[in-house]
Image (cartoon, rainbow, N blue to C red):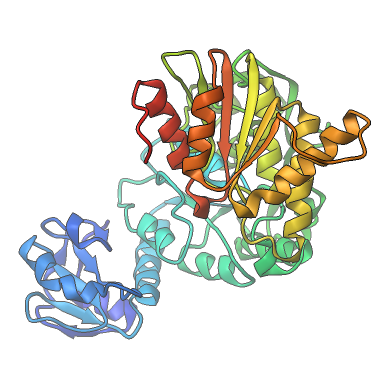
Length: 476
């Protein structure tokens, strides 16, 4: 972060300064008292079970320059505010304004799925042109986004921000913290449908990013998604479209997948054509790569440099199409960070393109789908069978509908009228039961996809399966 005094922090957030206002924050801004180092600013967040203010003495002992907190402590200088989360956003706004005036280019990315993968690709592309801040993981909310902004300093040329939303107004609020010059909208899907209420409301909310762009800004819109393309009138500046259609400004031609399901295509942009060979898995990554390419070109990078950087970029964030092969020849694909109907189908499409003796989908529930939940889970089960999955394992009570839909589709394929038990569709109650079942059926050459919404924790099942293949068969 740029160096600021506690007096400047207090002025920026409208807080009460208690203690030495000349103390200078020379380190980072952190919400974890265990990570505090000399010169850091500790933001003491109040939580349901733990109050960060209780750890002010520990932060002082670690050498913190001060704290942003809802109550003061004599152990160190404090800026006292009613709402530390809101104050964190105001501090990030101050820093972002200063850095933008000095030439920082900020890219905001939103969409129902693919945000983190696109952010990871774009961050690596922009880094070939200069210092870039692009956090690992999904730092996309009222805490994560300001913390990302506050890692930038005077040397930072590009800042990539992921913007999530669980309701109308959320993205607009994030843009008020750090207004991007380039805004990328990937898609409008079913993620958080239960909280938004309809796809139309989701589209309106994602479009808040487009509406927040300045007149000299650029909106990068996925032309293959009609709801995203419909956001174009909300842009005050230039609109750049991406997709596979001939009319897209930045498009992919000749798309193919190699024997590890990694996309290959020709990037067509600005009158140039360049080959791209992605190192990430799944055909859905083409759309993510096109959005990253368009944003990078809007930031001033030439298409040839963008294509080369995309081809060199690897996966950065955990549990997103992580492919690991066990010593016994079983391949585990851990895509368990999160799930919605669209990302589930994308993962299934990638699974069936991987070379395998058997393709096994281990699927948990999809959260926050609202009234559409039962129908979407049943549809997913049918889609899995139609995609060509050889064995489906539905994990947990919330995934019962997946098994029901799969059995119905399998019965229809076989011309049966019943939907009884079938060897290739299995329902288990929990992660431990899934691990036990799979231990008895996995064989060399099998490829196992593990995916569910984040709250179900199936990334631990993927880790268990890898451990079992290494000879550690103890249940956990």
